[in-house]
Length: 172
Figure 1 (cartoon, rainbow, N blue to C red):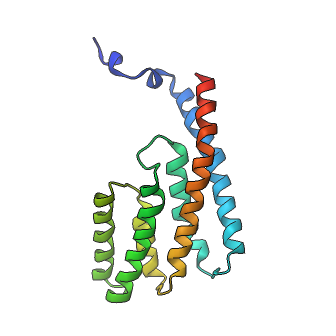
Figure 2 (figure 1 turned 30 degrees about the horizontal axis):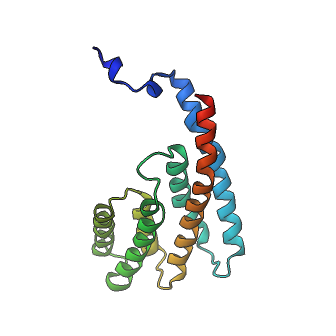
């Protein structure tokens, strides 16, 4: 009874086959979601000059979700709730503590605590908290923009997921 018997059959495939199966959904889903987010941000009434700064964290969220749809980050708490709470915590820390080492440390600690409480793992939530501080955001439009973007990613992911599952079953 060697180590190979403990490896699930899906992991015994050649590395190239596994890479193609996980890369193709990400190659289709991530650019599609980012194009949709760009279009939505261009049409949004609360559009401002800093909206483009939200795309990199959204790109990471989309990649993490579409690259491995069965990962523990592929649920509402990680995709929508934690990033929005991260944005809110960054705004509140900026409002009360300013963009200072203490403010950044407080925002970071809050996001880490929220990750533990929500049992959610989404690294861009921390980036969105710090970005709120860097942008000196005081209005709710930043958090609304984060909510809009993360909800878009979540909805597209949930619509895409059954298609990806059917495709994966056909390949097996």
